Length: 165
Image 1: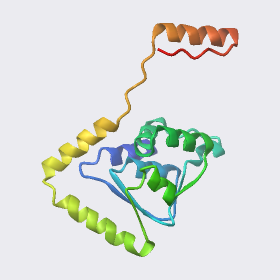
Image 2: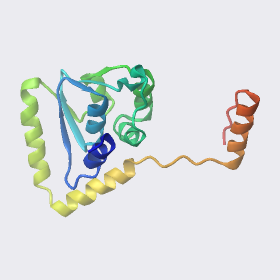
Image 3: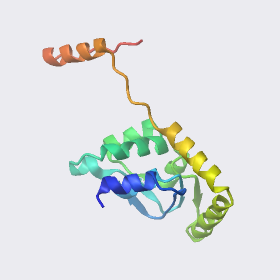
C-alpha cells in the first residue's frame, strides 16, 4: 500500500478514527493523525512536517487534512517552515481535542471510544460524512482576467499587483 493509499484509508474508513498521540508525530505520521476524526495526545507530543527541510514536497492529497485539522494559517506555517510545535500549541490550534498526562491518555482514549460506540451506527456514519464534507476546502476559483494578469506578469518578469474584488 503506497503512502497516498494510507492517507485515503484513514480518511475513508467506515468507522470513526481516533488518534492517540505520544512523542514525535512528524511527516507521514502527522498526516495520518490529521486524517483522523479525533486526536488526543499527551504532554510529550510534538508535531512537524519536515519535508521542506529535506527538499521534498508533502503529498498534495494529504494537505487538505492538515488544513482542516490545523486551520489554514497554522498548516501553511508548518508546511512552509518545517518548524515543530508542541502539544500545547497543537491543542490551542484545535489539532488535538484533548491533552492528557501520559499516564491518563490510554484511559481517555478508551472512554472516548466507549462514547462513540454508544452512538447509533447510521447516525455516526452520517455525522462523520457531513463533518468531512463541510471541512473539505472548496477548490479555488480563478477568473480569466486573473489568469491573464498572472501570465502577463510572469512574461514581463514583474510582480502582479493585488486585486481586491
